[in-house]
Length: 430
Image (cartoon, rainbow, N blue to C red):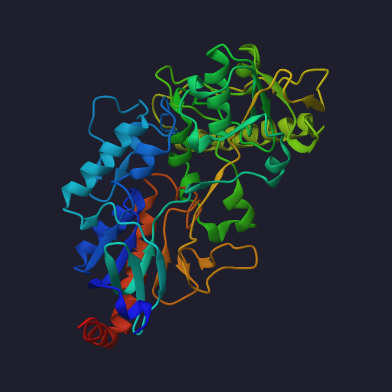
């Protein structure tokens, strides 16, 4: 008897949703409204990554009033504030409870493969046979650390942002933070203010003010329709999906966080980390151009906001404004000796999804999941929660609903078209 035949069958269902974060639960809610039988498998607890893979002081980049999911929205007393990770996890858990989501926690998925009439999802608690699978395990499952990390001397401590919690866990000495998107800037500031000298390696980035004309920049992005821009409208979808997260922070002061502020606080900025030669870190000399481009793009966005505001005339906004260009030191170091004044390298170089348990021919030559706006290159397989999946807002909390609704409609049509296989699937399970 084969290993597969010996495995216990936990159940048979139309759809298995993998991941009980905000995307998986949004899908679950909409599947439930269509009376489509499903189960949600979660390796830890609901909203697990928000509870276990975020640093202590982290807050959302979007204001609380933007936290909404199908049939559920923020109703607290601080709509313009920014939730901490733990509070967001509680928000998502309350959402699951509000519609009795069929979640099985502490049920990690070990393998997804083709079954005789659909898919087989293997877990330590038994296997699920299903006709469709929704991958909602998140876009930030594992850190994206460049290969040059292997060249850094063993004496230098290395830490991905996913494992960072607070400055106290770092070895004594200076810190090189690699990456200047939202995570990199926030960690560089926190570590610098803790009393440790920080050097920030800056590559391509998106600069934005926290507030513009007395409104949160996310309000403008939503009001002008920028967040609803569809991937079909973009000239280069692959590049759009790789754009770094904007340099924002969610603070009670609603303050702008940028390279100018960090430098005033004592952070040293250098160019992109380009290589290692022994214990010497080598940096790109293109920092000035990279920052000029980020300033240019920010000003273009603000100009488009001004144009929209002139035509729409929303109430309660302030006058148009512009911000000082990014300040670049005259003498930029192109190399630094690690171990002298830098004892830790903190990688804030982004994240990527982990589909290593997906035993299906759905990956391209680069190992990326092949999909068309969430419809994976195999019938009955879907993915949710990736950056710019269908819209610019796809990876945001409030962006899950529209994507999930469209994919649910496609999935329901697929199930209708394969109705006969449902009877056969139940027969296989018996």
